[in-house]
Image 1 (cartoon, rainbow, N blue to C red):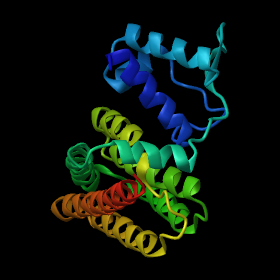
Image 2: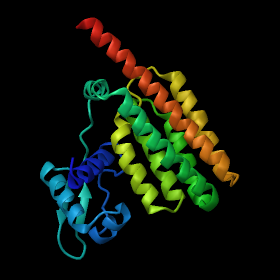
Image 3: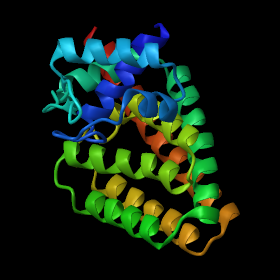
Length: 234
């Protein structure tokens, strides 16, 4: 997959997961490309693809710009098929990367986040806890992780986590009856928030990495169960 295709997939998934919401105006291309750490040409090509797909619309003029349209949600069956086709090694590698970026984000957030950042993160954590559908749960969880990069005041970590979540978020919260997993994730979100609020960077990094590892083990378990069922049906 080329760089333009990667950026296109990342942005399309961010829109599908609600990180970029319907009606939201994207930053100017020069600002947005700098935030994502890519060239203006790559971003322009990616946005053009999204326009052709109807994911965004663009108007010209002083008050113009690109606006996010209503996203197309992936079906549960599509998500299961994607998870089944992804190898255990790839899943572990992706979550190792996620854990490293999450830990770095939480560590810096504990050093740099202000009261407003912490309050916003707490609101996302509460939204996750209140969620009643897999779609709501995925969106809240994804926004929580990406916002850690924002609270860390690092555009590169934010862009890195956005790209990671574009790959991983569709695997999360496939099942509707994962009450114990939701409770565990809620506790882990609270631990990360507490460490950030206490300005304890070492503990915040450890809590974020633990949360990432918990997610990884749960998804790999689901993947292996799907493989067993698939082999039995073959």
